[in-house]
Image (cartoon, rainbow, N blue to C red; front, side, top):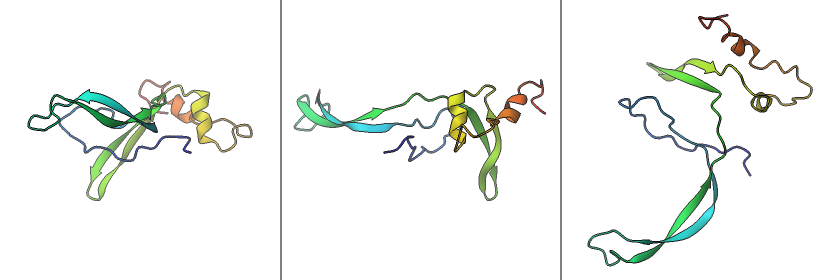
Length: 122
């Protein structure tokens, strides 16, 4: 069983649209069926009740902790800048450690100091 859902495919980027969330992690929880009225003109089942299978997805709560900007290069896209949130909770920071109890718990100390300066620089 996976502890963290995985995004398996991202849609093609439409540059005319503003910046938006392109994917949302979810688990497949199971399947069931629904009874609905078909709306297919010319079909034998038009305006009749049909039974269709559906997938049930569970979505855990998602918290955005940072953003990454990419830049186009001759060799493809590369990471331009990563910006982390000012305050990261303990439950987020402990995901970056193998052994949280033995560590010094200094993850993202420098990233949070950038928020204290007006220009965002150390």
